[in-house]
Length: 119
Image (cartoon, rainbow, N blue to C red; front, side, top):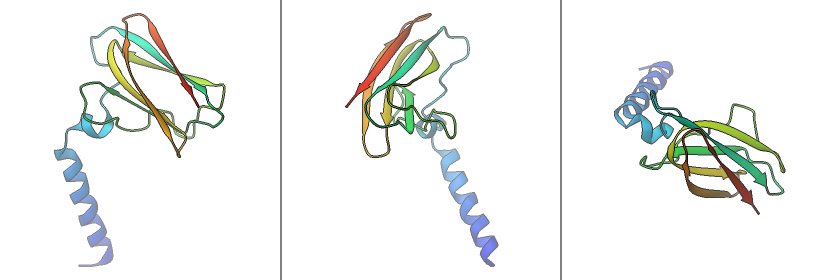
């Protein structure tokens, strides 16, 4: 078996294993669930370093999932970013690559929550 075949076989195995896992466990689930009312989560950076990742998942999902910030985007000190989500319970994790802050919040339908992350 050549190097390319081994690489493709390994990639297929990893893909298969990920597919076998719950999609929500890997991704954190969809931010907007079809047919549900929505609200917003505003993550406000009140620290002195930029956030390079914001992980958001429904409270009943077993992990925080993947980074929800768009590729190449960060939240600078004093800045904020708004995420539209289905109403309900959400776990949010904001980090700068060296540390992180986590919070569970309840987002009301048609309303929002501001999560001010401090030092």
